Length: 259
Length: 257
Image 1 (cartoon, chains in turn yellow, blue):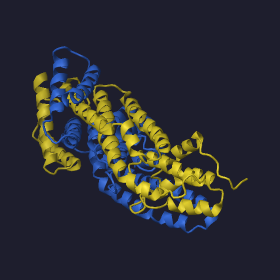
Image 2 (cartoon, one colour):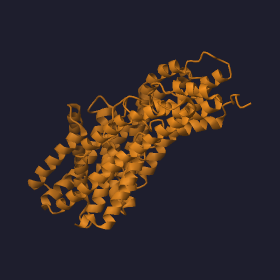
Image 3 (cartoon, rainbow over the protein chains, first blue to last red):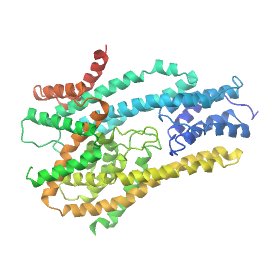
């Protein structure tokens, strides 16, 4: 009786979800997320393979090289759970989860990096900073809410979608149009940043530039200075170099008597 | 020395612990973004009794590194360490001083620490490779337990890395801020000016990565719309932020047809 595999239920997938939150706990330059992937699969493999030798053999297979965007790893985990379940119940003896993982991890990594790191994160950050800078003290909470509604929601959704579809990337693309969302978030971030510059005179005194100019000219000065900084970054500057240079300029201005 | 009294020392250890826990969110656990400057700054400021300083530092630093992305094996600058350190140094070391110059100096000081935190990050991640040997060397029946233990011990490595960095750098930062407080008024004014330029550096850093154009059309549309709404119609800035979000959204939905 103990040697029979047990069916995977929603609660098992939730266990995988919580473990997937730690997928990068042992992130190193050569192993990347390999151990994290196997760690997330552990409760499912224990349930599917009561035979200890077979369990160890399947677990070792999941310690192979793995690296993708950590949130979208949920989709691949869901698909791997489905494949292991099919194998354990004899529905498909020739499952090759390694092939599925290597086929999906690079494209999902690119999609996830583009959406979460390059679009959603700056979108939430620009909104929160633009509010905080005019005195909205709860802006950090809004930042966490804006980001995590998408982050946690998609992580759970993608795990179940991966399980149901067995790793069908077409189902993923049909369900979530990441490229369109990425464009929307990036464009909105840019216009929010523009809005921040356009309301420069309404910033709290801690942040506001004190230049002896009228309101519109202060905005014009701020916008023009920002464009110069963007151009400097484009020509090979880094934020750290820019900050150090700016500190030197501020010292020179202070010694020149500029208030 | 005033910065090494019992209260300050216990505060430093507390901040090293909290900073270590917040640092786990950067890579190892969850990535819910509580490690981001705009969240970590107020948390540290609130713990030390001055959330306002944390909010200011969080707002100043958030945009500067938000586009530094952990893609592949690239390890971004540790903006959490910069935020936690500069907030702790500004709150603990700036008692009685005008807040902006102290904040400016703390940020400048901790930005100089970025190469040190990067080296610590690389060392700890290289060391982490040894964890796999612990798991793989286990006999068949306990391989699951050994793998889980080896994997989770990575959390300890990540925590200790940050904890040690804070324990070393925070006292040095506090010593430096005591020296700063004795510097001429001109340098204090320079640091205040530096703080007021930092939001523009943040905006520039994000635009640089989001658009291939310096004068991006969405950026310019946002500037013009916000300036008109705030100066001609006196619309509150919070409402203007909502309008600019919609502006970008509409621009993509209808502009790309």
